Length: 193
Ligand SMILES: [Zn+2]
Ligand SMILES: [Zn+2]
Image (cartoon, rainbow, N blue to C red):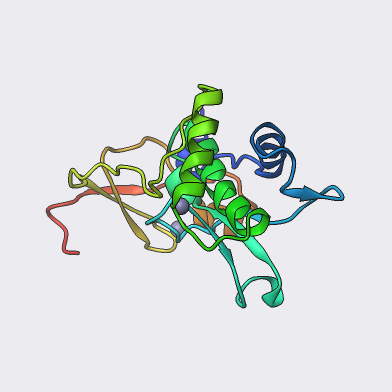
């Protein structure tokens, strides 16, 4: 029997810093890096950030009150093509640039939009928009995927063969796919929420 590692367990996360450095060079004249260090920290969210693709923030809650950071949503972006990740990171970098370099408090104002237009016109790999959200399919799910280990339930549009619970694979099997974490699929309608 061949076991295939499937997406629920095995999605690779791309490192963000190389992309940050490239976008900084290509679209921000390098000003978001000083002495080799990014002026804003960049990280992936944990699995819970599911309503927005990314955000930029500076303030007392960040890095002991002195820092600023860009956070990209793992659950939103990992299922979308790479352009979505690139345009989201670029969007948040424009926020960082407006805040740190121009020292303006505007959010999606004229400074933001002007830079966005320049970036969009200069390449066609991705397009930045003022949205932070991506359209999420609104059809109701047809299945619940239930983990036999932790009993977590997640809605799915379709059944996946050999999909295992990512959390339990992480916790109990060092991040490797394991058959004891195979998800069981139950029809959505027949089960109570
Ligand atoms: Zn924004
Ligand atoms: Zn589990």
